[in-house]
Image: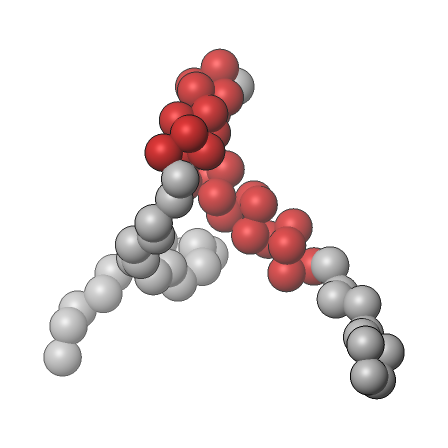
Amino acid sequence: MKDIRKAAGTPETVKTTMVLPKGLWKAAKIRAVEEDADLNGVVIAALAAYVKVKPKRREEGA
């Protein structure tokens, strides 16, 4: 079994790969640098905001 160490109080993480449009990646990277942030933190914040929004229910037959 793997020994996975993490600091107390930090959430468990996973490593994944995504395929992004080059222009979107570049713009996000530039903005992150301008804001003294890292792209990983930007993606985490964006995903956290995304999952908080409840999807609208589609009407039947729509």
